[in-house]
Length: 310
Image 1: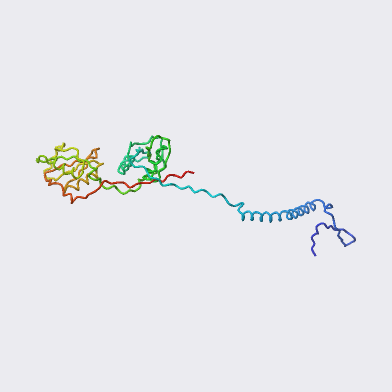
Image 2 (image 1 turned 60 degrees about the vertical axis):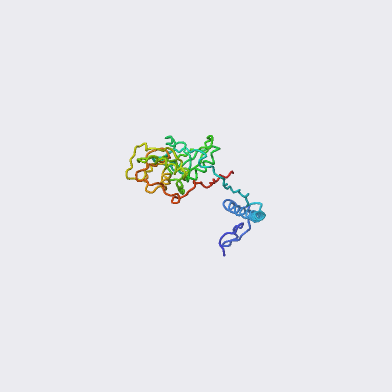
């Protein structure tokens, strides 16, 4: 037999050693017992009311999902770039500035960009207040966005910044994250029609410089000065010397293809023209059939990726 008291039941004494029970109303309970049974009644009532509501709500939500009323969002429009023809590399100017601690970096980069047919307007250091942590920043105006996008392909990781400048010119500011330009196949040496040549004679053979200049002209070289060497050189045991500056390396190599035994000599000069200085052992130009026939280099058309407009 369970010795625990039954809810709502209280003991009643009838006689010695005998105990009987009678049913009590909840209103007759007092103190802790009353509080205990009131809590139990509230829990039963809440369970009775809440459980059907939960079941009904679950079924309603499931039906809403099934019919598509909830649980589905509007499709997000995909933002994609568009490919557009790029401007010509020589159609705008680039200012190159260095903001990091590498001495001479702006000059080095500008020289490489010039080799790739970009037009450099100026080179220098950025203001001391300018700090670029990333690879580079390319500043451009509304009309220069295409120019900036084309230049960005040369400087991987560079960021664009519209500073509302006028025109289509841009400014490239190199940062501490700069490493190198993107790889590009070197251009072939220029064709004869793109090379300016000064022809100088150091021998006692009169008219030799003019004769050689005429032959080179027939081979489409652009002849500039003709005559005796202004440096008064005397090449007693040499065929010829080709003098050229840092910007005319390819032109000098192309001219050297015309002459067996010519010696290349790099000198300090700003001009892109080259000097052919004829020595005593000169025996004439090579036959045209022995010289590579080339056409001026034409850069393939380029494209840029225009940012999407949201």
